[in-house]
Length: 181
Image (cartoon, rainbow, N blue to C red; front, side, top):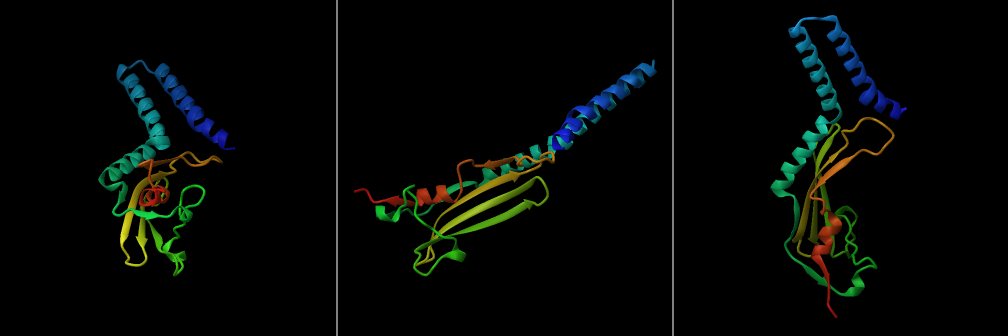
């Protein structure tokens, strides 16, 4: 059903607009009227393109601008740990603050701020890794994302993230280092 919707939107409607324009072109002899037919056709087709992609383009630009201001990973203190603290992937277990146990030395906080709630969604993901003992902020990662804004259908929504390399895992990799033996 969704493929039919896409075909209708990207082929059917533009073909109909062009067919009406050709019919109007043949019906008139006035150069002014023909100019208006061409202008109307171009505006209609541009409007259809804008409805299909324009909001995504604007949201992607907003993500780029926000990312340029404060996006990225910042490490304020690195922590050296023995190799047995790391799993087979080279990561340590750092729980979210709400799930951290008293014996957990470190925790992370994930804050999400939505700049736009309707599709396409624009949001800010802010990860903070802290040490429980003194509450010190060890590092933070900030990224921005656009999610959705596509034609409806059974497929997964597209997204755009800036910076591409960001998030909690990358932040933890940069904070926690293995002791060199």
